[in-house]
Image (cartoon, rainbow, N blue to C red):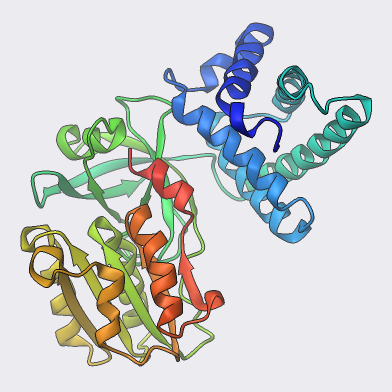
Length: 360
C-alpha cells in the first residue's frame, strides 16, 4: 500500500478500466460518475491494510461492507472478477515490490476478506431486504438549503437512534449518500432526515430542492456506531454542528422515551442564528425534561468554534461525548474533548471518511 499510495488515482482508474473491459456485465452495478466510487475502493483497501493485524476490527469492517454491498446488487460470483482485476492493477503499478510471493499473499488475503463479506451478506439476506422503498410524506424547507424530510418505508425498517442510512434518489440511480436519522424509532414507522444542499451535491440538492411528497427513494440498511450505551449511567455531552444536530436529537428522544435521568448537555453549533433551524424543537424537549440542557453556539455571535465552546462549562470527566457535524468539526472536536478530560474511548463519532461522502 505504501508503494501505490502516491499513485492511487492511477491504480484505481486502471482497476475499473480492467473490470469493465473484462466483465462489462458488471458496469450497470456502478454509478455513471465514478469519482466517489474510486475513492471508496482506495479507502476500503487502506482500511483493510491498516487493520490486517487486528482481526476483530477488520472482520467487523468487512462484514459491514458485505451487508452494505447488497443494495448494489452484488452477488458472490462477482467477487472473483473483482479480485482478479484488483491484483492485475496492483501488479502493474507496484512493480518495485511485486513478485510471486507478494501476489500469492494478496490472493490469500483477498480470498479470505471476500469470503467474510459474502458470508455476512448471506446471513443478512435471511433477515432483511437488500433495500427498502420509502415514500416522501412530508418535505419541510427550513432554510434556503436545509430540508427536513419524513419518509414512510414500505416495510419495517430497524435502526437505533444515532445511526444513519444510505439513501438513493430516483434522479441519480446507483448514487448513494449517508444521512443520519433525526428521530428515535417511532411507533408509526416514519423516518426523519435533515438534509443540507451543498454545492455540486447531486443527492443533497435533489432531496432539498426537487423531492416532493409522493416521490419514492431507496434506503440501504442502517449503519454507524454513534449510539447510546444504555447500560451506563454517565452523563452525555453532545456536540451537533449544522445538520449534525439530527442524530443528537434522535438520541435525546431515545433517552426521553426510556425515562432516563442521565444528565444530557447539548451544544448546537451554527454559523448564524438563522442556521439554528431546529432549535425550537430542542428547546421544547428541554422544557419537558429537567435532565436536558441545550446551548446554542453561533459563530458570528460567540466568536468561538463549537468544540472550543465547552471549555466554559463542565467538568466533563464523567461524561460520554458524542460528536456529529462536518468533518472539520469532528477533527477539531476530538482534541478539544480530550483536553477537557474525556478519554478517547468515551468519545463517539461516525467515520470522517463517511461524512465526506455524505456531504454530496
